[in-house]
Image (cartoon, rainbow, N blue to C red; front, side):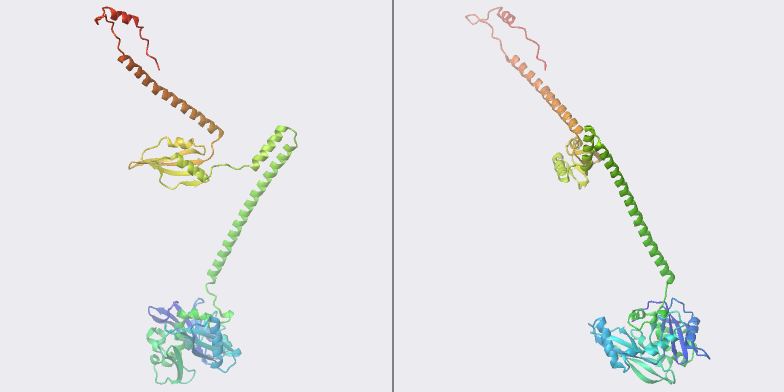
Amino acid sequence: MPKYVRANATAVCWSGKSCQIIRLGRSRDQFKVLACWQSKLGQDQSLAELVVQGVKAVGCTDNEFIVAGGDQAGWGMADIEVPGAIGKEQLRGALAFELRKQTPIPPEKLLWGYRLLPGSGEQQNLCVRLFYVREEQWRKWLTVLSGLNHVDVILPAPLALDPLFANADIVFPAETGNSGYQACKAGSLRVVAQNINLAAMSFPEAFPPTEEYQLEALESLSRDEQMSCIPALILAAYGLSRESSRDQRTLISPPENLKARRNIASKIVAAALLVYIFATLVSGYARQFQAKAGHLRRIESETQMVQALLDGLKKQSDPAEKEFVHSLRQELQDNVQQMPDFPEALIELSNLIEAPTWASTRLEWNAGQITMQLQSSTRNLDLPEKLEESPILGDVRELSSQFNQGVYTQRYNLNARFDTEDEKLEFAQRQKKRLEAAKQQALEEAAPQETGTDDDSDATSVVAEPQDENGNAVPGAENSTRAADPAPGPDPQP
């Protein structure tokens, strides 16, 4: 079953002194005859003029697909089976060899092409329809078609069968008389039966696919006129199918002056757009290169200016200026920013961030800038200060902080960098103050403990009362004893 890819197509056929032109369209699942024209040669009129007149009469446009059929003399065809594994170049060689067996005419006097026919999936061979025509006959066909703007395919109607009307045995009328020849199906190939009597044959019998056509104006013609239009009906249907485009690569190509020039305006616009895009790209690259060249020139100019300044300072005899020149040159040569690398920063973070705090998402490193998100069951208020006081971390900023379902989530941004001298000095001073405060706090906590110990020892001490030799207490001895004891001093102050 062929696949139809066009909406309209026109077929041009001629035989003897008559011409038949049919413009065909596709309507649902049927072919529809959009226009039908046939005429015979008038006095002092050529076939080329007649063809041009007919093409204009059916309303064929310059963008429409045109198939020309030629007449019935000077050409031949043969259906051949070749091995399926054969390549494209080998196929042409095999067909050239087969051509010598099909006709006694020397190959240099012939033009030939072929069509690949569809076969069943079980077949291992390719079905090829070979088409050949005398060179002088081909030139006659081109003369007839010379008045047209374009022709897409030139081939006789029997060659257009299969897969088009693959199961139909179609009769083609001869140029004279009531006889013709029939292209009969024989397996996957076709054979031609000659001398078919058309006198008692109706148009549907001669052309079985009639039921697939909406004949329109063709239906009002006589039987003989309908019979003469059979080749044009087949070629117009072939022009609607996908095979007509595929076969253009293997059939005999029309000359350059007859090749189609479709969609010229679209092609011109596309070419203009392509040129515009190319010019825009070239212009953009040129401006970019010019900007880079100008930037390099400015850098070179500044370098020369600095070099001239250095050379001028070098000639001066002041040692301080020479030292300045040396330091400036050294700074220009060694202007490399020193910073910790990622492993050092990662180790420092691992040491400073303690449980139960952990990094909940990936730690991002971008040229020394660190972004991280921490989670903890308790909020660590001292962590930013610890990170800031690290010798290789600094510029700590808390981006966000939130509490959700018992978990504190904090997001920080900091830089991996070495502390400056001022920062080192400030950190040392803070550390010294912390140590002094811790020492003072330890002394304050130790003083109350010593005071409590002295009070306990005084309360437990006992004074022995004086007694006589019989063991009785001596009156007034208590007062004398207390008077002899010194008065207690004040409690020691912390």
